Amino acid sequence: MVIEESIFIHAKMDKVWETFTNLTCWKEWNTVMEDVCTKEKCLSCGSEISCCFRPLVFLVKATIRIEEVKPYKHIVWSARKKGFYARNIFTFRNNKKGIIVTSRETFSGFIIMFFSFFLPRKRMRTLIQTFLKDLKTASENQSRKKTLQSLQG
Image (cartoon, rainbow, N blue to C red; front, side, top):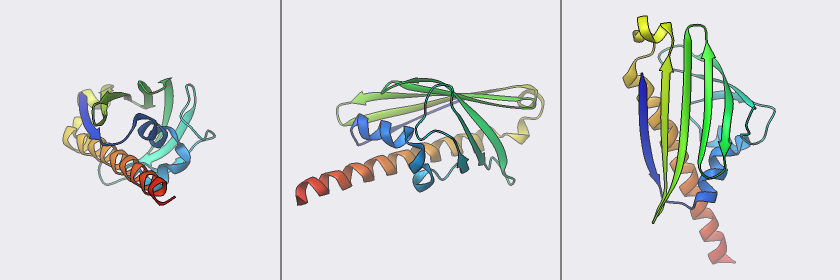
């Protein structure tokens, strides 16, 4: 199962990148992942994030491993659980008026093959869309704050 979603963010690349990679701020804007724990302050290759998310009724604990970070280009992370594997590639592209962030998540394993009702496509798409919308709101709000601060003084 592959789910791909994109969102346009009206902000500069450095603001979107900082919002996404600064793990100390995730609890302020990320409504998809709960109880985010990590030893790192920023996403970096080889680091791990422990978190919970709610694909249906119950919280699911997950450990996300950061596989690749290419600044201002893409981030690749994956999660593995018994019978389940997910890999997500986030790409960041400049546009004349902002940034386009795309999430391409691939799910595999016997749970997906035989028990797809445990991980319904529509619900997973909604979680990815919500994560991207949260990123958009946080990035755009930070850009507005910075603009107001520079105008004020």
